[in-house]
Length: 188
Ligand SMILES: Cc1cc2nc3c(=O)[nH]c(=O)nc-3n(C[C@H](O)[C@H](O)[C@H](O)COP(=O)(O)O)c2cc1C
Image: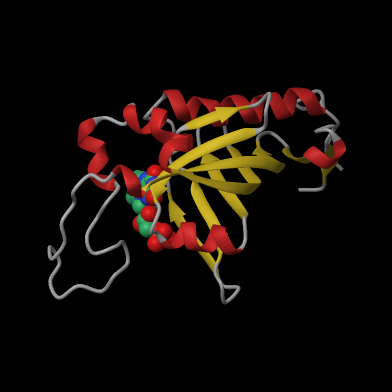
């Protein structure tokens, strides 16, 4: 049995630590939290995962944001099943963060203000012809015009967070919106 000593003295303190790791990913391009893995469920119920850039994170509202192409597979998946998950591993803090989210897909005039702030050089990520994932004859047989109509923002409501810290002791806890983020310790 481990001694009951940990750097995380209470659940709120542990949750705050998790959120500060997530939020660092928005501001710090070098943080591993900048590039979470986003999981969705495909129409055949198969799991699908891919790397994304974390664009916004807000602990108070329990929200995060991701930018993508409206015609991408992840948008198709989330339009059928809005349940998704995100995974982050912060090696320096030795912290694994798992988020369950419900995604709302916003496009067009709803996200015009965000599109206006996308740097010119990044706009080519939204509008690839043919659409992302289409088979092509040769590796460079595509064009990348920027197309604001193809810009989509995944506004994700975080509904559950699970943290695992691999420190002196292994510390694991789960928090959910449905229990007002009070949280519970879990056996690691
Ligand atoms: C470092 C990195 C960052 C990425 N960021 C994004 C992103 O923010 N949004 C996005 O749609 N795709 C991003 N991608 C590409 C996705 O991982 C994926 O290949 C693409 O979106 C197609 O995924 P899908 O077919 O599952 O929709 C990124 C890839 C890498 C390697």
